[in-house]
Structure formats: C-alpha cells, structure tokens
Image (cartoon, rainbow, N blue to C red; front, side):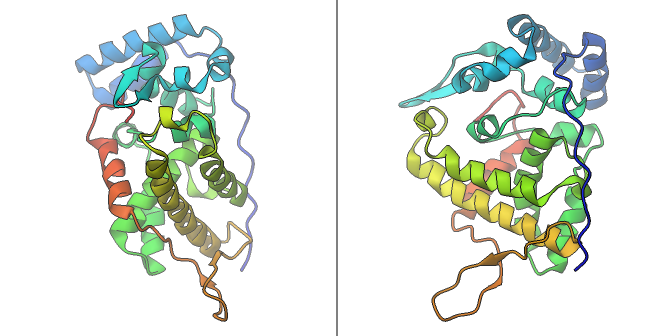
Length: 263
C-alpha cells in the first residue's frame, strides 16, 4: 500500500485574540443569542487571569481544568478556566494554541461538536465514518468512536482534515491514555480509578478504529493488529470496547449540554 507523507502543522502563536475577532466567531456559531454576551464575559475573565497564555499552560492541571471531583461532588476551583472552553477551541482554530494531552484527558467530556458544526467544521467525521463502514464497522460505533478521537487530535494538533493526521499523532494519544492513569491526581478528574480504566479501554478501541481507517487510506505504515490467543494468527484489529455504552453516553453529551460544563 502506498504511503503518503503528511506535512507538519505550523507552530502555535501563543497570543490571545481580540474581542472583535472572537465575537465574529461567536455570531457565526450562535447568531445574536445571549450566549455571545456570556462567552465574551468569560473571554475577558480568562484574558485578565492569564494575560500570558503560557502561564495558563504552566498552571496546575486542576486549575486549568477548572472543576474537580471532591469525594462525592464536583466543585469549581477556577471560573476563569472552567468557562473558557469555547474560547480555547477558538484559539486552536486560530492557530494560537495546542491543547496538551493531560488537559484533554482530564476533561473527560468535551462538548464542542455543536459549535464546530455551526462553524461549518466537521473534521472529516462524515468521510471517515463512511470509510470505516466500508471496512465493515457498524455506522454508529464508527461515528461515535471517531468523534472522540478526532476532537482530541484536532485540539492537540490543529488538524482539521483527515489527511493531516499522522501515525505518530495516534501513537502519542494512545500513550497519553495509558500514562494518565498513573497520575497522582487522577481522582480529581474521575470518580474512581475503575471509571478511568473502563473509559481508557474504550478510548484505545477508538484509536484502533482510526488507525485501521488511516492504514487503508495509506496514511500510516504500520498495519494495525491485535494479539489473539497463542497459536492463532494475528488479524486486522477491530476495536474492543466492552464498556461502549457508557462511553457512547458520554460522547452523546457533546451536543446535548452547554460547552461550559466539563463532566
């Protein structure tokens, strides 16, 4: 299979964007609703709290996530970060920042797809879903799995098209999913270690599906495989997601809840 090289994404600018440019984006997404006014208020708070974007990236993860789990309930520890999700997405779209894996995994439910759709950005989700179906995957599972993976890769790399995704991108996210469970502060972002382990297993299945699709597109060199019981031949990987319904429930929330709610 021919392998196609992918050009690297440009480096981020690490600069805030003006109120006017953000307002144009918000109106494209929300029209003239009150949501625009609220989002501009949170942008102003975030810029005041972190005039240097690098200072936000250097802050403790709990502060950057903005809301943490405290034994039995979720508490807000930073309104500036908690309400800045949409502004951060905007900054990624403008090439100003790239969000790190730890933040993307600590925020277990990202609700950005509705806003991306309103901004006419689909991250090639429909195209990749159809390609997965042609390879034998069920449409719903492929669609929801790719939603999870493409949104994280976009926010980390800035890739808005499937052709921009590399094998290394997928490998890096897979490694990050595995490494996140060793964090000493894991239970600030998940209700239990078991909850994260369950979701992480499904996340790896989502990544496996994407790698299969990319392999058949000629974008990755390594043929995705899974290990079978001793004595059997390896086969092209199908995503193993034993807790898929729980993961799909989290993904479904992407378009059903306000973007400022992290969990």
